Length: 245
Length: 228
Picture 1: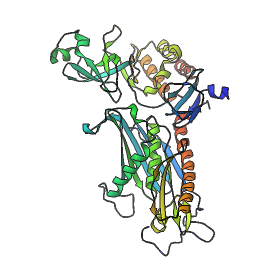
Picture 2 (picture 1 turned 135 degrees about the horizontal axis):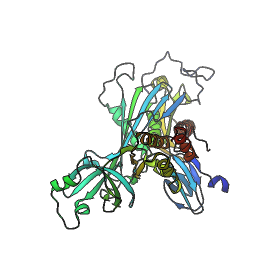
Picture 3 (picture 1 turned 90 degrees about the vertical axis):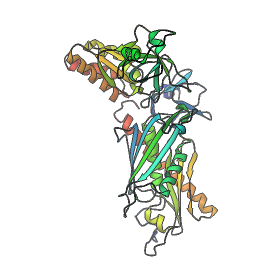
Picture 4 (picture 1 turned 60 degrees about the vertical axis):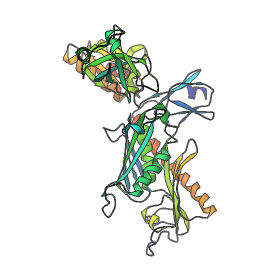
């Protein structure tokens, strides 16, 4: 992975990571649904040090018109990092990395969203990273799926996401920024838990076949934990004062 | 198990509802042998069918729906109205002026101008074209007065209530006339300001608390507590 920093202890002798977590532990995740008044649906996620805002607009007219599809709706995702989201100012123009992440998140959400119901329209998802701390694509994907559900867009399942990876020769869950920079591998996973389908799988680094399998198993466990948090965020907004169920 | 299924449950996208071979109605899909919800709402399993009553979402035009729209512009021989959906309602000139007529733009503007509010019916809606709306009926046409309110289209069935119980409760205790469009737009008109305000408050209450049971009683209590 990126430049290794020799002075960072990624995993101590007790199996505790640099931020005090165990190897199979995720960072603290909190999600709130319906935070933006002007968006059709929205969500705010805090995934460890990541702070991301997601807004969904539409289904609405497609502009430019030539992008519209007479058979189905289209899903457009814009992942964007604020200039102040990282240590050193990031230029606000979309970078190669942001374009790539927008693309993979679109592809991770598409199997879940039932777009055929809205021919000739577009559903726009805007993801603004307010603070980045490694694993933003997973956090953004989880927030986007909550925002889509909040907007009432029909979905086969919520897409949850969590990364797994390898650092200090151990397979770890939910890779943070330090582990991403100095570790050996990072594998973001998008997953639809109820349907048991993986919608996003990337790998940066080198893993053996066994490590790869372990990584996926651990990543899916993380996804299931995030899924429960996503569901409780939606329940809180829609059913919190409910007196049935 | 049977009792558990027949009760209305809160569901989220992807939640499993039942496996029984039932007719699929709104907001459910079949994945293998499992029937799952596609939206946030209340699952409703009856003897032969299954559906989810959605608590959120946009309005999708269905034939014979009664909607309230705002005229946006005139193009060719048609008016185009905002019907609070991702599609615009198209009202043909011949629907207003009679078959075979070719009204000029000024004649059309005179009859229905930009910003006018209409109560219309969805005459035709398919996937290829904009939905066709019609005002050719006695109860339909231009709405001249009243307060236009917008609520979530998913909550309209709740506002109407079982056999119109909710809307009758509100109308009865405020003396207001409420025109409900299935697209989430509502026009409230009332001679007394107090009644109008109360009717608006009741509508807002339904919009905010649509997921609660016994909502009609709660609205009734709210209307009575203000001393109508």
